[in-house]
Each structure stands twice: as C-alpha cells, then as structure tokens.
Image (spheres, rainbow, N blue to C red):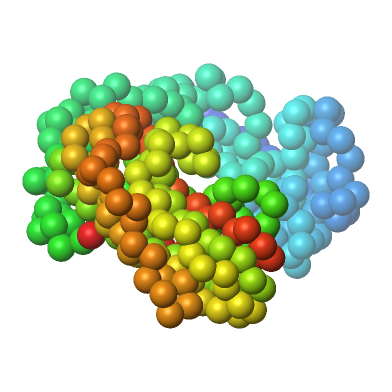
Length: 311
C-alpha cells in the first residue's frame, strides 16, 4: 500500500503534463494547417472557432487592418476576426472594436460626463461675463458732444452748413418774364436774428436789352416768393456786356428778412429803387429759400457765376 500511493501521484502528474503537451501540440497543428488569406479576402465572420492566417496586416493586434506585411493567426469569434492569441477581454485596436458603447461602462460613463458638441451656456455660467458686460455700452446708444474728445472745439472752428444751393436756369430769356437763376434752401431752425447772407451774380447779355435783378425769400424757391430787393432797370445792353449785382440779406426775426444791394450793367451802377426800408416774410421754423431772379427785355442774360453764402 505504501508503494502504491507514490505510483498513483506520479501517474497523475505525468497525465497532466501529457494533456498540456497535447493541447499545445493541437494549437500548433491548428496554426500550421489554417487557411491563408489577405485582409481583403477574409470571409465574413460567423463560424466561431475557425482559424485562418492573414498575410498583410499592418499591426499584429488587428486582423482587419491591411496594408502591411505582417502574418497573424486569426480566429473567428462568431462576430469578428481577432488575433488567435488575444486573451478574452484584452485590449483592442481603435477601428476594430465592435459592440455596444453602453456595454463598455467605463467608456460610456466617461462620455456621459462630457458636453454635447453643440450646446449653450447661460450667461451666469461664464466666469465674469455678467460683470464685464455690465461695464459695456448698449449696441445702440448716443453720446452728447461733450463725450467726444475735442469735438466741440473742432466744430466751433467750422462754418455752419445751413444751405443747399442749386441753379435751376442759368439763362434769362427775353419774353419769358422773370427767370429764377439761382436759389438756396435754408434748413429749418438753422438761423437766428442777425444772421446775414451774401448774395451775388455775374453774367453777360447776348444783345441789346434792359435788365432788372431781384432777390426773393420765401417758402417756395420760385419767382412767387416774397420780393426782398429789386434793382432799377438798366439801360440797353450791348452784346457780351457784363452785368450783375451783390446784396446782403439779413435775418430780422424768425419771420422776416431784409435785403440791400447794388447792381451794375456795363459801366453803370443800378441802385435799388428809392423807397422806405421793407422786409420780406419767411418762416424760419421750416425750410425756406433765398432766390436770385433776373428779367431781360431783349436777347438773353446768362449767369456765369452765382453764390449765396452765410457770412
């Protein structure tokens, strides 16, 4: 009996070694006789346990990444081809991992803690944003002149633009009566009592004929505006004789202006008509006009230059 027990123990150990050697031998046989494929030729997985050799893998940890020169024994898990010696539950290669993301709990949990690629934040969630915005001006806002450095000083040195001038007709033709040569639109509420405008025109006659010049003021910018000044009638002109006038128009109130001027025709001075000083009615709270008109009895009078300027 004492001799039999050691024999049994020895037999058991030898039997285990033989089984392990046979298993290894079986694996080696499988590796030797497995079919050979390229990655492109690999059959669709679905027969668990079959083994093949793949001849053109890029890395030995993947059976399906081609473009290389490495040979790998691969086994069919029933759903994918994996390296034959990969331990169950071992590491995978990105691009060759299959399954459901939620089943990989550590990865799913890590991703669940991340924000979506498209998302929003409340203003309070951005550090100091509310405080910083509180110190900014609204997108639409205004400034008084005093807020702009040197603006008041700069504007004080500029001449106020209060008039927009046009020349409706440069030529006064005989037989057409009074012709509007030039006019300026004065902006509403842009003048004060005492403001003065210089008015002048210079032109030439085409032939014999008398001339009369007028300054008008009013709401229309036409020959129907109120007469503020008129020259006396000139003597007969000759071809290419020069004529013109210069006058001052002064704002007397918000509702009236007064004009005084002197005209010339050839070598003769044409003063304004003798009469008591008078004013022309305006309404300076709305746009109003200063007009230069001329009447020519024969031929034409052509205004070559004309101006109305605030002085």
